[in-house]
Amino acid sequence: MEESDATPSNEREDQVNMVKQENRAGGNGHGTFDPNKTKDVHDAGGGRHDSDDKGNAKVITTDIAPAWHVLFEQVPRAGFIPDTIWADDPDDPGLTEVSRHANPAGWEAAVAANAPVITQINLGKPRVDDGENFPSSSSSQPSMVADMLAALDPQPGERVLEIGTGTGWNAALLAHLVGPAGHVTTIEVDPGLADSARHALAAADVAAEVVTGDGAAGWPEAAPYDRIISTAPVRELVPPAWLAQLRPGGRLVTPWGTDYGDGALLSLDLDVDGTATGRFSGNLAFTRLCGHKRSQFGWDPDTVDAAEVTTAVVRGKDLDMMLNPEKGRFAIGTRLPDVALVVGWDANGPGRHVLELEDLATRSYARLNADVTDRVPFSVCQLGPRRLWDEAVHAYDWWCENAKPGPDRFGLTITGDTQTMWLDTPEHVVRCPWPLNTGSGSKSVMG
Picture (cartoon, rainbow, N blue to C red):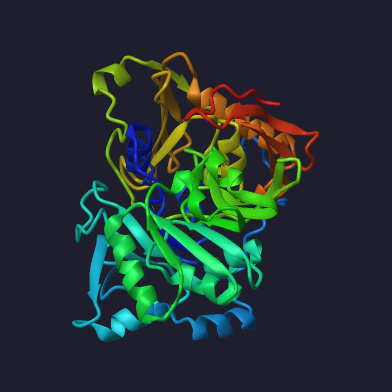
């Protein structure tokens, strides 16, 4: 999978990109988390829902099957990675530039590893400074690429649309899978990335069509498609144009998430009657940067200080389950429409974290000060018509009451211009239909 900004940004998306700076997606690339940052260090028990953690989400395997090794050898990743990349530096909170010419061993090791490779930072800026710049394109780790291609299941001779070209490696893999009788169209919003991908694909003698444009609009000129895959995550709403350009019986695969958390992989199959139904799997995390500002949302400190202050009913154990992508984060996010989350790890000192929630549309805000090194209850301030922290706690309770479901127990049905989320079966509705043609999920009703 190639991660990139597949659609033009708007004011809301720009803000969400800025404030989602919780955990850097590292390790296995499917969602990393440090429970030591949220567990209640000085409290031996007594979480709001004190029980074992059975029923956690199944994580997409990071093992790469031999068949994928063969494909990756036939279409080498190295041919699509630029000469300059960026990597985590254990001695620096930012990212370190790695040059193929100055550090060939380091460059080759990064490209050969089963790990994501950051190939562009905020349209080429070389450093990250306090979260103001962020990776805008990367080559995802090979195991995630294999997982998404396996979910898509492209067959020889099929027509495939890819949303988010990135480096072009995923398009090359798709072209190899569909063969000379098939056709791959890949669309990229960043003209520079699109040009680089065209050159890389031509150099590899791969006949994939690269289009520069808005990924959310798809590419009707080459429709209908047998398969559509998005390598950029959608936020709650699947673009209607994608399903409109998918033939009946076709499949759509995309990362799907909320402002509260990155989310999971969604696979949708389109029926002959135009209804798309599918399920989620795994935990997907995309490259984020850590931020430690007092208010990532830019609220005036005096306004926040004047907000209603209460005592939180949760402890460190609860925060672990509410924030961990392998526990309750996906489910809680589905119950908090239009609510963006920022976590400032150690913002007020070691073990003293700040959680912020915001709904831009209603101008509602909440901030939790969580000191997991002390038994003193956490404090929370809330303002605006929505009590966002209270909603988050209710969503957490709902998750616990339903046996702590992971993403693999959720599904989505799209009929016409509305979508419905369900748990286990379509009869157990989690969110009633909310429209695809708006940028807001706040009009949905919780089941």
